[in-house]
Length: 465
Image (cartoon, rainbow, N blue to C red; front, side, top):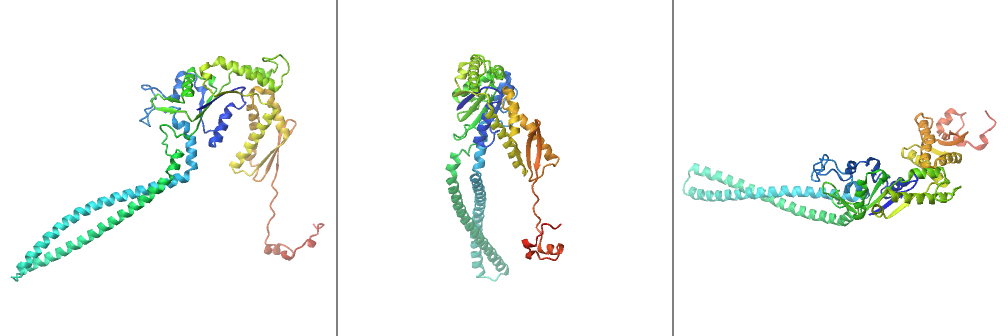
């Protein structure tokens, strides 16, 4: 288990760190288990993490998957994103194994039916053999009796016994042939079963090594990783701190229903806005802090925030709690260069959204726009990058959405965002029309009888109307 405690000014990317990590690991910023501590202010709300205890409303019996409320902290909730990503990655392997399993099931069902039919044939042939034996004896007796008499009734009985004997022998031949066919098919099934089992065994190692045989309960495979975000931990009830004490120390905990939750392959990112008020005052009044009053550099301001955050976090949380973390990081305030990079990133996200929705539209933003929005956002440093993101959304993204919804932008256009008198100005560079391709026959019909194949540059008169 790895744990990181992130402190510092609001809007500097503490929560974003967890989202970016999840996107890097699993391809989605939402592929993590978030715990919003705003909703954990009461002790009973903390119980939703591990579930209601026995006898209480919402208790979830692990043997009953349909009843009760499932706790938030379960092995499946923690590791499902990595597991689902592996399932997508090895979809061909899973598909191949599923096909083999289906074929094996069909063979087993067919083999079962053949065995049942074989047992029926054995009983039928045994009964038929007894009947044939009796007919043989009756025929032999009748033959001896008819040798000394010409009784028509006896001769007729003998003739009927001959026919019954012939039918019985024919039935025995048919049943015997069917039995041989069943025996042959059973041999083929066993051979096919052996081939499929061998094919399945070849994928077993890769299947088990990647944890694809996990059913979502019990300990997760060792290769699975989970990301848990505890956001704004100072807002939560102290009961949450006690839960985290055990988890961060042992890497495991036990839910109220008795099931064990494994966090050993989990990355915990805990964020806190401790001393947010003091930090906001410091950002608005850079002269405040531990050093002598006066104008301070960004580095000095960052050092003051670092010292203030560490001092306040020690007052807010107990030493055993802080000692559980592998690292305590304090995010420094963003400077102009950081904000410019964030602006460029927000514009790039806008372009990617257009591509995902298959809008063939290019977006170009003038540097004056970036400088203007960054400069205005830097006037409220206590809000961090959130204000800049809101301004990009309000002044660029939403305006572009309106242009699209009113069909003022078409496929192939280039949207240019500029700045005039501190206002956003939108213009578009339309895609040049594609030249019309005219057939030779059409040219001859519409032209002056000139064959298009004989056209050359000397035929063009630039002064002609």
